[in-house]
Image (cartoon, rainbow, N blue to C red; front, side):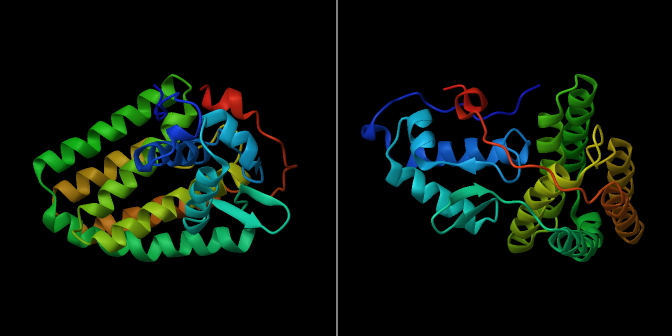
Length: 238
């Protein structure tokens, strides 16, 4: 199973445009979230411009947007690189997820319908299938999608967008500090959580979410890795 965004292969400055930039933004963010681009990896404007066939100005705008989303870090004279969260930032992200995601569960339990539960179970099933097939990139994306979809069911778009960004940052944290072979989210946790929400047991779901997030955080090992220069042609295959 592969969740990569297909990017049109048009070359040259004529390929610049809002739709084109959106596709490239999605392709780069997916590569970061799915760990194909590792934290600390340099993102050279000229190399990305060549890979995607757009101007360096267009790439610069996309990198600036990714920086606002905290997926990319822009450093004077060094350029862009995939954000490498610190240990303190990792703790802050999971503390924020505890407060926000757990707090949303009672409202989700009040609002969730049969079709919503079916969508969530579909995401969980796809995640399990990806894990069975060894497609860790897809599993990471599907887990983030499930948590974001859960948040959107509470009916607060602002908080849901915040949860989505926290999930993206969690992916970076897992890439830096996660234990090899462990993706963090256990799929049986998701299944149990969905069952509680479907039964309207919001307070229990909040407790379950808290336990789930603490279990993910407990898998982190604070070990620094050497930075690497990514093969952009291989990653994006355009």
